[in-house]
Length: 208
Image 1 (spheres, rainbow, N blue to C red):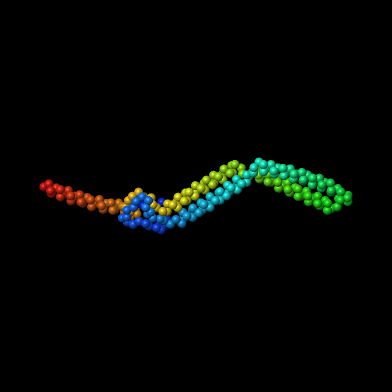
Image 2: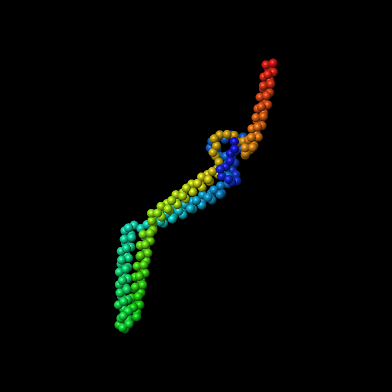
């Protein structure tokens, strides 16, 4: 009976010896599992990363009411910028006539810059809210998580195969290849043929 590992590696444990009877479930031997263990750890890390990406995309989804709040804020920011724009238009001629000071114009310009920046920022938030968490992106990340889970299961299965215990019943024979078994089998067959020949001759002598 030839018994060999399904995973390559250096044998680190051997629990059987030549001629020992073994039964189903007996531990036979183990090979070095360093490579398989590293693959399991890498698969776990990839799965964690895939889950984290999925969580970020799902968290980025904006509910309709949240978008509505941003829309209201944008309307207020747009109204504020329109007012600051009109203030610049009102103060500039007064500064040129000497009725208002340069400081008042600088303040009006600063208010305009502030309101413009706020409006642009809210507009970007609305754009991101509408693009984030799209269904196709979420589905793609969920598929990636499933693939990472399958890869981890495969790596764990390979790691488990470094411990060889699957056997029905048999005797551990000497030799690790078919040639050894064939040689021993021919030797036994020869002995049986000689024994049968001697038995036949003795039987004939008995008849005579």
